[in-house]
Amino acid sequence: MANILRAQENPPFRWYYAWTRLDEAGDPVTDYESALKQPETVRVRWDKEAADGKTREVSADVVPDKGSFGAEFALIYTIPEFESKIRLRLDKAAKDYVPKIHDLFGRCLQGKASTKWNKVLKRYPVVDRTEDTFKSAQQDYLESVAEIKNLGDMVIRQLRDLHKPMFLPVEGYIDRRDEWQRHIDSGYLRVTLSQATAQERAEQVFVHQPKKHQAKYGAEHEDVEVDIETLKTYFKGCHAKDVSDGTYEAIVKSIKHKRGGRKNKDENGWTKVESKKSSSTYRKGGGEQEPRRSSRQTERYGGRRYGNSGRDYQRSRGRNYKESRHGNAGRATYYQK
Image (cartoon, rainbow, N blue to C red; front, side):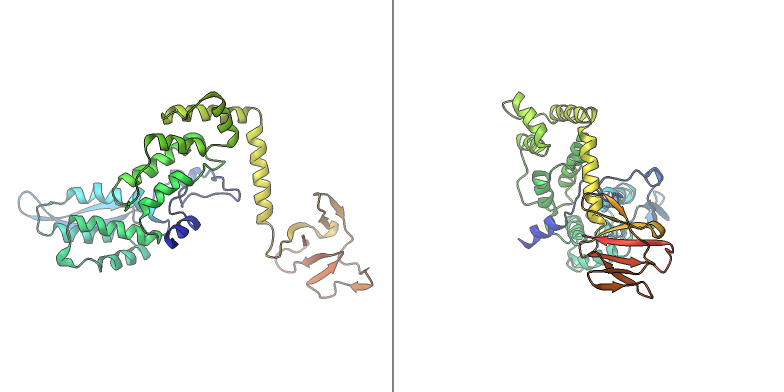
């Protein structure tokens, strides 16, 4: 049970890659420079016997896994490159094939990822290592990075339970589900649960759509069609209609306003509002702003006197006032519930 709760609290696979920048509302930030930049690589060298019997040094440039972005980074970059650029170039008939794949894969890992791999290898005595135990070791490694067991089971649950995010287009949602399914089918994730049938997968796509779109589909269809492409086309049309009539834009603005407001609250629940000190303002409940007398004036409220002589914190009318004395001269910060 604790394993499931950990996965719910911190899903091992998210709708957006762990290395994707998101804004405060959860919308991906468009960064063309980062998108066009290729990941850094590390050069792995090893000795290989040539056809003439001589040994030569060969190398491959591989994107290393540092364990910083969860298990999916290795599934997308490091493991496929290890398989295509290194393992396929090794001679399976060689006596040192099994120990070499364990060693070379370890060289594709850096930092805490390398530490986790070395801990995993301690569970597999050298004399007992085989190609099969190597695949098991890779599964253990990914679980160690994610700190969750049976990662394939977690992906099956996510395909069933996680609803489509607001900002993720329908085609992106379908593509991401397909990618998660490829992770399950790759053999690198340990699976004990039964996978969904084609009809169940189609129904998952249906129930993850907005309620309004579900109702429209239900009014026109008795059952959910099993063809995912047909469903994708239908719900893309629903989304396009929301965009054209302004519904989508209104919802996006509302979500970003609410989440941005929560981000600007301090630990006590006060909303932070900055203004020029010469014309200080405070925010009322309805978003309205009123002028406020300069903080340099001495004020008397409720029979109590507050000035600004050397004080960093003052209080008046039930609002907290803090004057910045370092690095933000000429500005004032107000906090209001």
